[in-house]
Structures are given as structure tokens and as C-alpha cells.
Length: 183
Image (cartoon, rainbow, N blue to C red; front, side, top):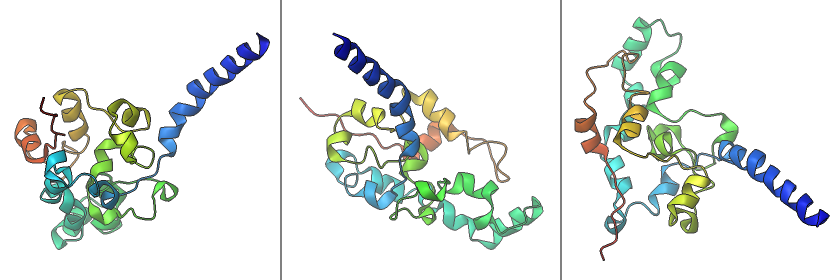
């Protein structure tokens, strides 16, 4: 009985203290990893939707003369493509040790900018089970309100080029549902 209680206490500690930190240790794997499973039409072609979006070009925008001029006017010391103030919304920014070898910040606002670092949930067996994916660190959005809140972390008045953000209109351009199985 003592062994059972000890085992229960150890297991509870693992669940309470180790599991939540695991998502924080996930690495960003990049769009190439995500695209392997998310470009087929039958699964929703989420990669294709992203590829045609302005999110895919978000980093590239920072390399333009116009972006550098904006950065200069804002008093930034570096060009736009090197300024954390710009990079925060134009790509995924994270500690270098959390970036997998296949991750490329130049891919812009990619999957993991919204869905979280994917190293622990990228496996097919995990991705096929939504609850497992979320438990492994994938960000879950319960409804459009939660999605809109995430969008507005970048699409807001802090942006020097901000114009009114019309969530419904913009979401329609990037929405990428997983098709439900037909019964």
C-alpha cells in the first residue's frame, strides 16, 4: 500500500509540475514540417491557404525600403528586418535554442505563430487526436472570439501601418479548417 501511495504521489508531481513545462520546451519546427501533412485537399490544405496569404510574406515585407523608412521614423536603431519591434509580428520570435534546425524565420507568420511550437505535437499519431495535440502544446482556439484576440496581438494600434482591423473579413482570407468526416 505504501508503494502505491508513493507511486501515486510521484505520478501526481510529474503531471502537475513537469507536464505544463513540456510545452514551454517544445521547439519551433517550421512550415516545412507542418506542410508535409497539411497540404492535401482532403485534410483542408491549410498550408496552401497560408502560402497564398500575406502571412507567408510578412517577413519579406520587412526587407523593403518602405519598411526601413518606417523603422527609421519610429526611431528604431536597426533595419526593420532586424528590429525586435517589427519581428515580433512579422515572424515567430523565440530563443534560438527553441528553434529546430528546419525552422526559418524568413517564412514569416507561419503555423506556429498561432498554434505554438510544434515539436511535441507534430507526429501523425498526436495530430490525429485533438486532445493529445493540445496536451502536447498545440494552442487551442475555442471560438472566433479567441481567434480574434490572438489576431489582435499584432493587428492593433501599435503597428505603424495599422488600419481598422475587420476580423470577419480578414479571418475569411486565412481560415483553414480541418474538414469534418462525412458520415
